[in-house]
Image 1 (cartoon, rainbow, N blue to C red):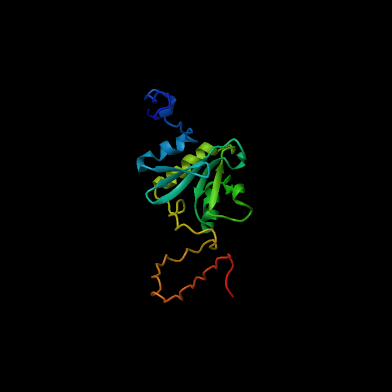
Image 2 (image 1 turned 90 degrees about the horizontal axis):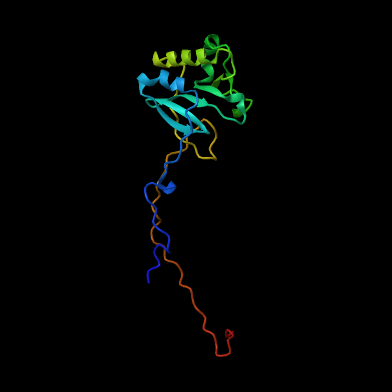
Length: 181
């Protein structure tokens, strides 16, 4: 007698077994709509949604229920461009979740009075090819490598030439179960 199935009918395409996993709603969808002419791609990142244009990451959209202080639109930029961007986005600030140090990421906070206007202005800068917003992701680092330094390239080592290993001598047990001296 066959054990397959164990008396349980196979799932049919209408069952919950085949149901597609529900995706989370896109936070701040209007931003993605504003960049549609550039055919952006999205990827989940840190529980948020990263937006790429070509090979550059330009924005991250965040709207989470926990730790809401950093909700909004995260701008991918560099530290040396903060000052010029802050003149155009006065409510832009560093992201609290990334620590107290200065990082390349800045946020247009969702609770700012001009949030939607500022986010759409950032989209206009991206559409115009503004080099201050967006950066090409670097090579992934290993957990032990210092920040900012790339891991050394992988090197394939050839196994050493065959080395003659000494043969292990087996001692025989006597009939009493003890080793002879």
